[in-house]
Length: 169
Image (cartoon, rainbow, N blue to C red):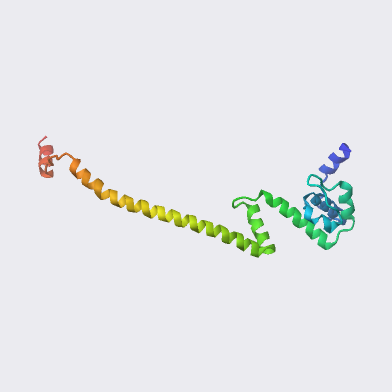
């Protein structure tokens, strides 16, 4: 098998037409991402959390896929791959696009909740900032008064006198 596998993996298939058999192969691999709640759509009974679809079950499924089943498989694959979404990476952008299309109300609730938390935190930060600025304004006049009282008085020579000494030298 390894000899065949190496030759098959090395062949250039980019110019040939994508066949229905190849599409079934794709669905075979995509089925690894099928969520348990969708097993019923494929006539599969409940399985325990650690159990997954067996190869024979996958082969039976791909033999007669309906358009609805194909959509379920593809979407579950997308959802499974959205697990790598974070921050503002490309996967996160795609996840938000997917959510806007398939669950706009839920997404709006989530965004509203985040915005509410953000606004509360922002308000607290602004209040702290205002308090610190007010405290700083109070301490600056006191510091200036202290600085005037503690600075030694030095006689300042007029500039003219300094310049004449330079010329004389």
